[in-house]
Image 1 (cartoon, rainbow, N blue to C red):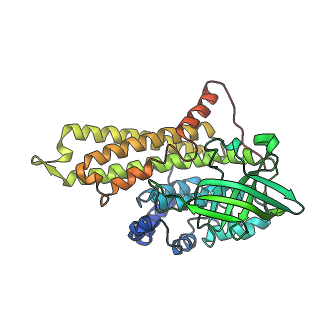
Image 2 (image 1 turned 180 degrees about the vertical axis):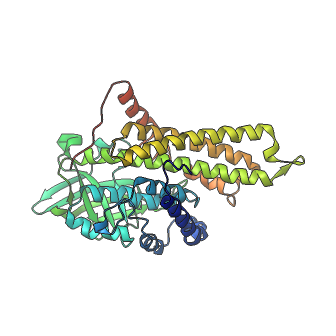
Image 3 (image 1 turned 60 degrees about the horizontal axis):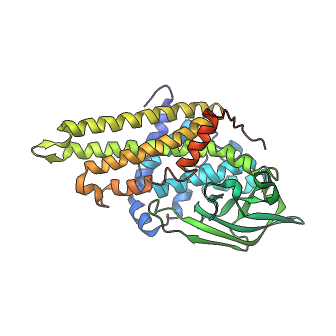
Length: 389
């Protein structure tokens, strides 16, 4: 572990977290993958250990720790070998809760952020729409103010924790004619009348409840507006930087775990009287894969350090997700090949890992969208600035 980034406390935290996940999560992962649902009890166990409060204020039960604790949290989740479980955890802690912490009123934080940190409540972030995809500005969901309430109508899709969560952070148009400048963010309690959710059947991330959600005249208090009306698009763009960095970290971590597992297999597997690690072609392939992952990892650590200091790393985070997810897919594909026929068998971890990894270049902004964002920065000289509440 790189001592320039990690203290003894970081190392102890990693050890404790890894032990916890091996004891409380790994034995149940196969069941959760088959059922498409995580046992609800794990949320409170994670909360009791403080894992949801790493980056959040102490006044709401958090620990307000540096972002390298979050990085360790993300890396260790990938070793569970369930992209769905990992996604459910970080989508709650770093998508829904990030908006809640940054934009919600003190009253909403007192009720929802505290309960989110303790694991008593689970949140989801609702941005993507069936007809919108990566076109956030083109969303059609509306929130019309009527007296001291907003009435929400529309639909969202591909929402992680979208079926079983307790509250939803929802982006909607309050002034559709203003396009992106007419978007706002709201907290919607799951118990609100008019919400329905359908679980989607996915290629990977099977342990997570990815849902399509419909809002039919859902009435919420006007006080559930988060931040200022009309600034929703800026808030979303602001937090995309952290989401993309998170997905970049996830990618290098799962690729690193794939290499670790594959090397262990190759050291045991014999062919033609030799272990697989003794064949030069295979040795050199693994050396190449390890080099590519190490470069992503080092880049991501450096971005994390800058992000932790408050820098707005939207360009670098976009680059991280673009390249790290691509490399993870390619590395895991090649690692599966090293296992031969066993790589294709579900009993071995590479099959699931390959399916789970494929979402990397899609979720949180497709690679095609990221290339255009990066092109605008490096070619057109566009400058993205952080939003203000």
